[in-house]
Image (cartoon, rainbow, N blue to C red; front, side):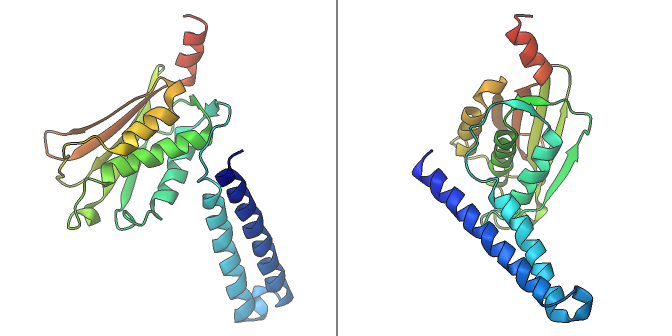
Length: 208
């Protein structure tokens, strides 16, 4: 494991220990109904638990590919996107088909790919259009799953491809990935990620 990986594991462990200590303090102060201090400590501990869960999603995922659901990945990616310092003022709507078939990727890798897709779209909004936000849509068929992150406002694409697209192509390279960004006829910027479904990749492995 890399130096960064080991440091992150150590930080996770320390964070978890401090959280346990905070919970013990809250328990020592009595039940929430016994007083405002105990209730406040319990509430802060719950917030920290949620932050710790998101923090644990950040290290680069290189685990074994497995069945992964886009719905869960999109939920986690959106939660992390809301903490991005450059895009925290960019609201994001999600319009996903709950019947979208699974893909063959490490679930954390899929989440990171969706997060990169959101950033690839949001980076094209200006300060004045950030409040109009972006929309994430996803759906799939037997062969492919498509995710689209699109600005709700007219946006400028610029000359260079967003670096997020190059990154997500690499991290999802084993999932028959296609990624692109383009300006739509109405002037919005659309970032698209297309992944082979679990069924498609299994068929390909069998030569079918």
